Picture 1 (cartoon, rainbow, N blue to C red):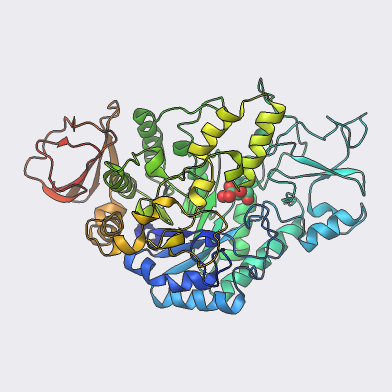
Picture 2 (tube, rainbow, N blue to C red):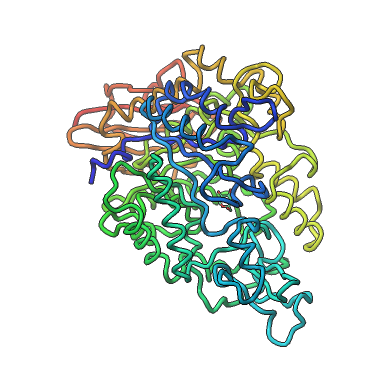
Length: 562
Ligand code: GLC
């Protein structure tokens, strides 16, 4: 299966709210994307993934969908969407949609109907349960399980009208759909076929490993100091997940070519991922795993751990080895839920920002798998200088803050320290197009402030500068097209115990690549033999290293024949 087109491709994620605003309302939109298609074509990416653009009350910025078959008016309409699709196709880029079907919005007509009465024909489209045995419905602690929601608070909402609770693993405006009900599954498949018929090229599937739940809904384990339990053992990789994904494949994808499917799967293990992505099993092409972005997170959610490079290498090395034969990796540092990688695993100070952004790109793109670039990553965009809780907009940050400070006795400052470093709004500040006020994102007031560093860090300046992060990413993407070992080579980790250098080889036939990234601000020597006289393919600094001694944050790619 080495000829699967997406193995040679790079995907670019657009978060439409924050990409480009064409009409001055402070919110990005489809016409804004259309206006910047040439930026993406110049970068050389093959696929655009659009975060949700469907009608939505925007409780979770569009991940709460009230109509799966239309476009949110803030963003445009179906005709504009078709224009975007043909504009991308004309430039040789595909478009995949975000598929958010673990839950809908509580304003979706399905849920409105479901909540209307216990006898509603759609009652069973969601997870309704009575209060805990012997408890007064609606009383504190009477929730059907002790699970906490991802966004803080209980994962059950009491509904006065019928005296029952509904399940929402995320916000109370995101009720979980009941995939046990075949009518729900058929409605979802219908909708997916409708988008494919319209011309879209696949789906990124939101928290898709949560769609199958243990129907007995057992209580979770309560950790000391938390108000609610972690129920995930009952809904991550649930009993019917493989069956549902195979059914979806049969019903939606069979007989259609040229598509890409990627399942977002928090908590997925390597062994499960092999099963999900083995092409013979017909589930999805690749998954997003989370191990490498949870490496700086300990058992206490409100403590920051410094990056330990040996751990990061052990994790990614395990994923590389696990999916070497069957299945395929996705590769990402960033998306709309993660802080900016240059601020997280690199060094965003003026002295090292550019070098470390390029180094991180090099290491990621040279792994075996399909790389994803999140908007602004190709510019080395950084975290935002957030102050107090009032600066945050993200429902997760606000909900978790409330739970931690009001229910769990944390101090505002300890929670804020983590939110500033890890909060999702870091990724969501507007794209920095130029050095004008609001960074060329909008002529109005942006829904979330533009990072003040847009005067130095912006697309216009970087497109004009051959040494920029932008042009370096462009070269990395180009290398995947010109050097077959980048997409197809096997992967061998080197120096697993080195705390500064990330080193590995890729080999395909008679070609071998050596990739080294210095994850530190000090010079570091790589004790690797046999590469004297090898061809230097790419480095991120002016000077090539001597004897494999890399300058701070330096990255190198060498090539030799074997
Ligand atoms: C996924 C999305 C995230 C969203 C959540 C609920 O993790 O990436 O942004 O909040 O699912 O839909």
